[in-house]
Image: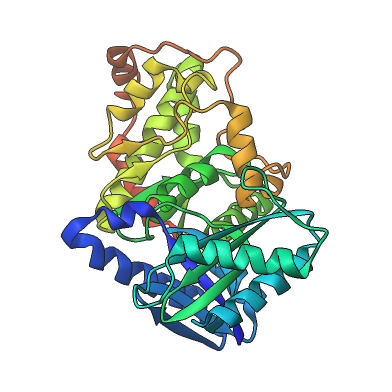
Length: 381
């Protein structure tokens, strides 16, 4: 008798048809990656995935963050024998000190002599015979006894919600425009959860933004790496671009022109590194540059798809997700990024594309972008 982690992966993977095997192999590789350094054993029982480790809690904490896993369960492995199943179920119910219970059995092993309903009845009757104070409640039980019968039998002791989504690395890649704010790390998490591999770009305006601001963004990228396994961060010097815009362009157009330069740099880095898309943390109407008109003008300079997974989310929902994934406390540290300095008093909220193109014509766009990329710093986190 031993305890294992039962891994339940997302139902979407079952629907992949002939590609299902690819998704399963990638998911298994990602699980092995997060368990690196722990002693563990991968156990298969009639297509169910189980993991055994002496350090079960640490293994469970790592596995629940793997994208593609819907739920993990701590289970007790026993022989597929009715007497052992009844004793294990009774022991579990007693450990919960519940007043009501319900038995839910699944019999995958059709050679087992009893079907699921028969197992439910016999286990339930056995528990009632051993404890006069407990009752059956099929609608709202305090304790639910889950049993799976395969080559072995398994009695659930704990169910833990996992990250869900699809296996990381199965759906292409993107360049995430990562600021030090709340939104962009959440956007990166959402893309990674759908199987998209993350690279990150951060725009650093030395000396107007401090080294602590850069370290803050590196910390955010590290938090994302807890879910992805690794993240590459490109830190782009952005001061010269901003100063050129301030000196030569209208003040109210500063923000939108700056966003266009950020998009150009992100696309060029994506091209140089074989990345298929760009991702931002923009949400429609949240700030002046994120109006519908502003997003259209920004996308004008992109040469690849731009994903905005937060585009229709409220700020409170984004903040809740940031807390859930562990980025919120870092994001609210009071270190300014390049988006929060040189902010015009009255930024243009409904820019016209032809006007912005005309304003930019006084800038040596290609040279400024090339110089910024030439001096990029790269961190593998």
